[in-house]
Image (cartoon, rainbow, N blue to C red; front, side, top):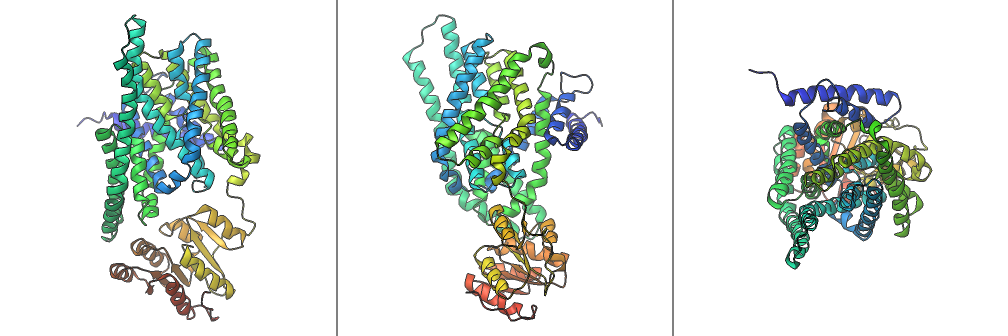
Amino acid sequence: MSHDSPLIALLAIGFGLAFVFGAIASRLKLSPLLGYLVAGVLIGPFTPGFTADEALAQEVADVGVILLMFGVGLHFSPRDLMSVRAVAVPMTLLMITGTVAAGVGVALLFGWGIEAGVVFGLSLSVASTVVSLRNLQDRRVTQSERGKLTVGWLVVEDVAMVVAMVLLPTWAQIRSQVVNGEAITVLQMQDIGLAIALTLGKIAVFAVIMLVAGKRVVPWVLHRVVHMGSRELFRLCVLAIALGVAYAASALFGISVALGALFAGLIMAESELSQQAANETLPLRDAFAVLFFVSVGMLFDPSVFIANPWPLVATVGIVLVFRTALSLGLLRLFGQTQEAAAAVTAARAQVGEFSFILAGVGLQLNLIPAEVRNVILGGAIISIVLNPFVYAMLGARTRKAEPAPAPTPPVQAPVAPKRVVIVGFGRVGSLIGKSLDAAQATYSVIEDRPDLVETLQGQGISAVLGNGISRESMLAAGADKADLIFVTVPNGFEAGGIVELARDLNPNVKVYARAHSDAEVEHLRELGADLIVSGEQEIADAMIDKAASVIPKRLPKPI
């Protein structure tokens, strides 16, 4: 059997070099993304030595984009998307218009022509979804108002780029006729309007199908799989849904796989198991995201720095100076605070995956020369590398957007009089917390909402940002040394995984959980819950009454 496998070579050498140069970048206090990009350049066709399969690398990178967009959808409900449409839609249109105008100006300056300028400007008008989302996730602001606005803006931009890619072939045909002196008929002009209508129609039909049918089917399937008690099957089910919906969106509706994956995540977010789904797919998302950046580096020809650097300088200027100024102005114009405008702008101060796709389509249709494509790639790489410096420049304005250091000592397990952990601080968890506060009992909280964790820490409560299904989060909250754990998440099947983990970490701990059905009660009992109750106020009352046997001082019932 032959061992000459392009895929194995790509994964082995790509991951190896990405690790080495990512580690070097981190030691130099730079973003690891720089190391991943350098690794891509080294295994690309423009540098000596090993050359990876470029087409294969791009396909692997596409999987990374799918999983990343799927993860965004898991944390971003349709209601959140609709809440920012009044700002995201007009800002996207204005940003694209302004950037295309700047792109045409640069194209005329360097003699590329107007049509190349339009493609050039479009390529620079859309921020990198991968980098922007990583910026939000690293700073734990995805669920904040400015995080939602950033994601909404990215989604609207992606839709606009899908429409642009549909129109480019029609435009290329019209341009060809003009160059050859042929007349353009009214019917041909109507093709442009028809192409736009068909694209938006396909997206609308796909969205309706997902929001109506998928909203019922996907959560139902997830609950059935969780009830089987196999984490492996659950993880496989989540990945099958993400990749399957993305592929169906592309194959059946002509929509980008990224948007299809986003819709899959949005639908799965309707299930109470969304956080567990996010945790199960996180390692795979991170791995493929690395390959995405490696594949971007492979496309770049470093000789552009020496041969003719001025177009590259102009490109970086449009992305980091012109777009930054325009974004700040538009956000302030639409009523955003100075801090929010700076945070959203910094997160989007680069270009990426759609830029590469548009450049490739433009080159294929002879709308741009190869030089322009390389300049776009170079500008994208440089903008990604310099993005942290944009954050540093806007740091004074963005500081409020990032989780502030807790004014209390670092999170640690409660020590007196008994160790108590509350998993989930919603309506039930907060009622329990009030009773524990009244009894002057020390407790820690595990919660996945960054804003709430920051609030609790500001109140002097030990709070861990994460999910109870995560071993790291449970250990950080002191579950391994706890006397009592309240599992207040509303879904009994998701709570089952938390109960099972709590028993594994601490066999002697008392675990109280909630349920809404007989099936959930049975599931929790099998996994070792000591007390299972239902109803919000009833849950809090029963848990506190039962806790009196563990916590010496009699606890008052919730108000």
